[in-house]
Image 1 (tube, rainbow, N blue to C red):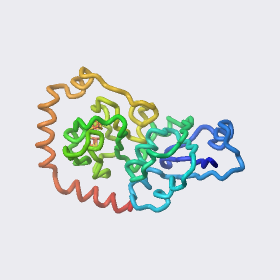
Image 2 (cartoon, protein in one colour; image 1 turned 120 degrees about the vertical axis):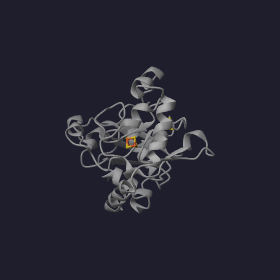
Image 3 (cartoon, rainbow, N blue to C red; image 1 turned 90 degrees about the vertical axis):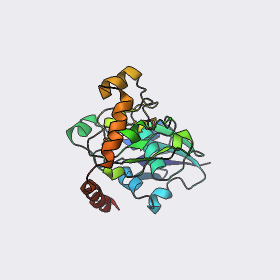
Amino acid sequence: MKTKAIIFNLGTIDRFTVDPRSVLSENGFDSFAEVTEFNELAVAALQKNNPEFKALFAEDTDYLCCASRPRAVRALLDFGGVNIRSKNITWLALDYDSAALKSAHGTPWFPVIDRDGCTGCGICHDYCLFSTYTRDDAREASQRVVVTNPLNCKTGCPACARLCKSGALIFPFSPDSSINGALEGGESRGASELLAAFEADPMKVLAERRKKRRLIDERKFSEAESDRKRYS
Ligand code: SF4
Ligand code: SF4
């Protein structure tokens, strides 16, 4: 069976410091074979009906994929509705320019969920004041919380990711490797870290934030709506 190679770029701020084609050939991929380059993955993931995006893994073949942060790519694909669970994919992590991520916030900025790590605890949903997430307790745990309003997320804010005990939240353009998908297994956080982050009783803080969220000015949502139009 032939192998198909795909080089993923997350967005303009995602820059490799190695030549992806050299890495593919070092890993046994014929350098003369066809390679697909997919750019601006975060934008494509937002446009859920983008046919190019949906067609990425349509072939019944083996795949060799490379990206700066493969775990972020997998979560973005899942978010964009591309199911790769049944595919045979080898992932290669490419070195990337972390200084570029520190110098500017990459956009579109929004969280994606690593379904292999999410326990469905709902902390991210309860904490976010901007209704980025919705929660459906009837679903199985790993699918319970969904990023339904990605562009409600405030650019540069990674607050909820720091509260995710299992490190399942990924902000693909964060300079912080513990939340940008660079670490394969995610980074689990202990109860004391959570308490420190909340600086109070977590349950009380979450209840107060839920209340506050309901009072958030509708204007914020119309701003997010105009952002949404930019990417559609
Ligand atoms: S905080 Fe983490 S584990 Fe809990 S629902 Fe959100 S993503 Fe899943
Ligand atoms: S990072 Fe901040 S604004 Fe974005 S989803 Fe999390 S809590 Fe909400």
